[in-house]
Image (cartoon, rainbow, N blue to C red):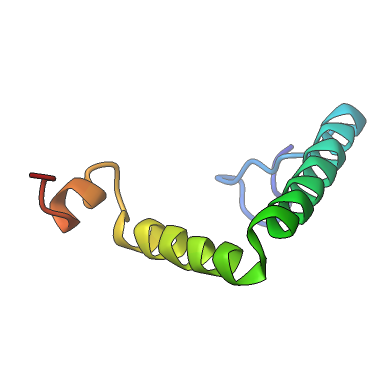
Length: 73
């Protein structure tokens, strides 16, 4: 769908099927997080999330992580 204020922009409109798939994915994620926290405990889940967030922050581009971290010995 074209943007009414900027002709260069194309807006996406989610279909009902897409909304249903996104809701299903969200429900799966919520249940996965619940089970993970139940098995590992909130502290370990928080630590894992912190590590993953740090990795994501360092990989700004496809090769960003390779540049940021030395190869494993």
